[in-house]
Length: 469
Image (cartoon, rainbow, N blue to C red; front, side, top):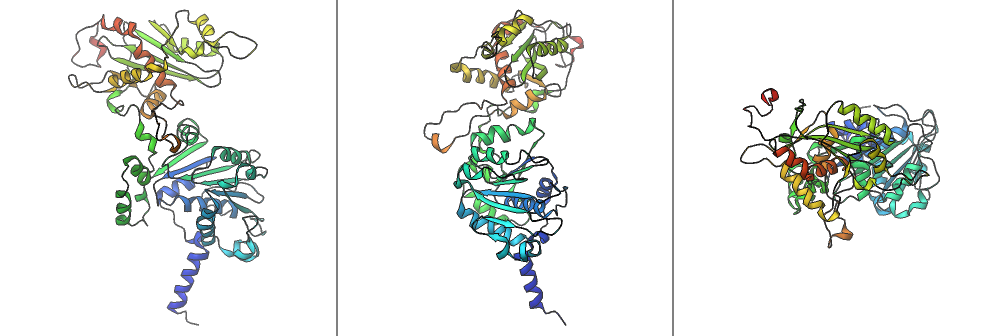
């Protein structure tokens, strides 16, 4: 029997409405996300990038055990949870998306009507091997934290930002799963502080978290003219950047915006007579940051080594000595917050323990009223001086990668709706340890004066230290 054009068109429409997963062809940026095996993956992109559909496909593939890039999470049934802002969004976005992409033959009873439970808000898949009756539970954040407790889930997908308590409850559901998957998809317009500190700023240090950013233009199916009209209708440049490229709005509040290429240097041997400073930002519960820096005869600061290590003071002190070798240190600085009890049976403070190893260590100025004044000093050193064409702060970025990263990403806390009227810029207190150490070194006037007192004629090649006496 000859197939008519109408029948072909009808079959194409049916497949688009009921078997969208088999027609899905991810664009290059979506494919990068799908290939990633990290336990926590975030797609934080502009509008119409395709992040929601990518999240739905990732959830479906794992439950149906048809993932084209990753192995099955478990040999048994995969139970997943897909979450969004509220129940109306579940009805308007999540349910229609899964209806369109899940082939009916993979559902319980071979139909949506038999597979979907309105009461449980759950999609049940076929019990045939290898799917074995996997499920996708649809939930919304307005249900509250208690509704998120109890059940074990192999995969959690949070579409748009979840309240932190619900996010933590979701993670708790995966603690007994050997290969858990947490997926976050959102456009970072006004993210909460926990998204900033626990996801964005933590990802570069944590191999378990991978962030994918992307531009709305990455989606080949987006109408360029419509996108242009939409973006141009947004007055706030920060929101415009977030909606187009996924650039987090608070990154517009970068504190050291001018930090970049001119401040980065390849490693070279610091001359022995340059005054050296070691600044220690120590903590009881996380890694201690140590910056090794030296002042040139021209009043420029060079950060040439770093340490980021946890453990007892004895171990950290040994690492510092190993790094220094025979180098002489002119000034030792430490965060004043180290002069507190460790809340253990031994009441010796961290500061006292460091003093036993480095008797000359001094507490740097940590007066909150002078923080922005000190930040302005650092900004002054980062800026290229018009008269010389060079800045006054340099980081040997291969030897000091964390210092380099933190100076570039140091930002103010995002403005939330609650404090929009009385908003006061304040640095984010996370991953700022090396920034604090650099700020303390620049604020340390005595060593600077020591450097100035040793001025010498500038060489023709400012970094050719062979002629320096």
